[in-house]
Length: 394
Length: 213
Image (cartoon, rainbow over the protein chains, first blue to last red):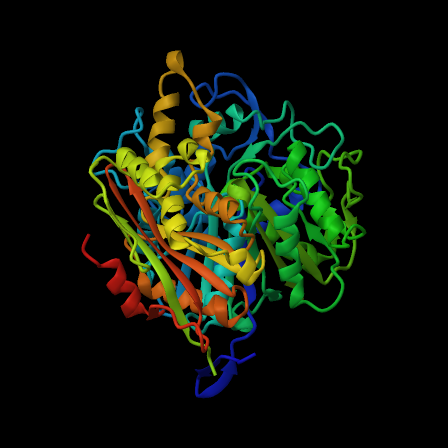
């Protein structure tokens, strides 16, 4: 294949490789990747019984970030009264990820990719109306707000692809760097929990009675969560002098061509995405970070796709039991956790999992353990029949 | 050497009119979108009852894809995962989000419906097109303030150059209250017997988008 060449300080450089050079996670468990990963390794969960009459007529289990905590955190970088919770989440996450890198975000070679499913949907009026002044529910407007806050050169690229948005955003950022159009991509995913999201998942009867239990025999649905995650992609591994850069492999997103709200019975779409993601990867897969929402159908479908791919012996975890399903942030947050698993040689257990409840054998790890791994296959699936798979490696 | 790509067909829908690159044309009598899209469906004898369950954004994208792919079987030509679908719009699923929001606004009249909620994601239209045409390939949905032919052409070319797609349905499917427009392009590699109706480049894409209907 043809290699893209770029002139870098008078020297020729190839831009075939894309690295993650910095990252962040913001959830109920903390405002940095380190805080989050340490809590996850220690077996903590952000999922709690939530009583919020504004959001739901009855109490439910979810992982939400305290209003005051986010307000105070954001006030360190901006005026919280001028930004919605969604925008605060995005900007807190980006701000922390940029610490320690020497990236000039105003450079024209920097792209910002935003991943979200519902953005500022909370800003829709009570009857769903939208006054002509209020453009905030438009996702491109979220992109504009971020662009202006960070003083970016380029327009923000927004990805809204259901629960695979985060992985599609990483794939897109990496591809645009490989195409030679940018040198760096800041990829942030975020979603906030709202009455809109709660009532929808509730109407689908997808919510669990207690904290969710991925891949478990007694799993009965998902727990919702909110959060943000960021990865900074670059063709230059030395952009962050402190952290170990991790390679972003070539990935793939696919469709089940089966049903808009039900996972495929034979896992065909996810199987195809995994095959394409592994096509360019030589060596054995050390770890799989699953979507593992803990709905009966999702986990079963994933188990089938993993098993069909011959990866049934690879240690699998799902971290949905730690911070719930964070929708447009999930793919990024869980990818960041995977990078930290590679760097630290620690595999977090699957919170909520005790006994396998899927028909195809997969090696779900229940307890956190020390294990040297050099790569991770990240997978996700979502409404609309979409799937995505991507490899991260040393 | 880079392979060249061409537009083998397009479908443009706007102002109660539909036109394709294969000379299908329809001028609707109805001005309101729900009526216009139904009369278009009937005019072209689509015969897919699931159409009536879709939200407006999906109906628009689905119908544009029907005409774009008329008499084609991409599954046969490119295999089940050879065709990608890369779409964008400005309003995501806000048109249906408003309907859904209205259904939950009043607790004494609270009817969240799963069949409405599922359409509160813009990528569902790609799911509907994929189901209809049995396409398992690359999928992505982007949000942009306006139609952006530069991004679209560059991104799709990259997908071809890296063998992520062998064929691609790409375009703009926008639905926001009364305002709607769709333009879809079928992009394929140019061969000795296959050179389509125009080269796939920014200028041609923009010219087709700007056709007056």
